[in-house]
Image (tube, rainbow, N blue to C red; front, side):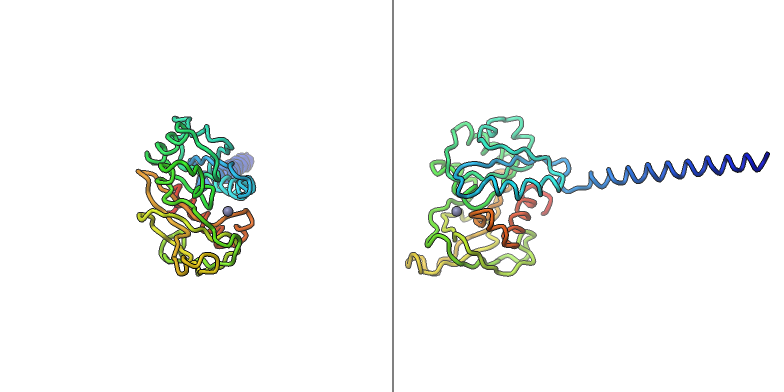
Length: 256
Ligand SMILES: [Zn+2]
């Protein structure tokens, strides 16, 4: 009789231990999901404008990566989303790949008010730095505007000038075969990487040192910009991809 009771207690204990371990392994895995760096953060990815900059292909590089990190991502290919005031205020980050094109006054106001109030923004090349050429308030937010890429697709070097910043830390200078962006830039930009022009395609700019990667504030919003990424293939250069990813993570606030 005693043996039977002992056996029952043994089975009972075994069942408790087994259920507890199942419960723990489940709660551990859901805990691991909650631990993802993007968890609880909202990103709006807006793509469009001039198709030569391959905004859709670029979307396919960055959106799956963001989702993998746990970010809640909305993808939109129109600018009207910028007028959704409440939604814009709920965001942690806007990524915009929208070269040239036109933005209405209301859309521009929606975007700029959101950034000013603490929604952050990241982008690259013409998608951020050559959008809405008529809109100087927009350019005031970005901290620069593309004006030329002498020689078109050429070989040039990117020089890391800040080796302590989390966006460029650990990188050495590297080469690109792409457009070397000549920009009009804001003196408040915190420049992390530059490129130096030679005079091969415009002799009067020989020796000009131009920002390539910068970060800045616009009101309470963080702004990250890199001029790398003319086409999706440019992100095959590991440094170009990694700097852009880190810039996005800095802008959204997960790396400081
Ligand atoms: Zn380009």
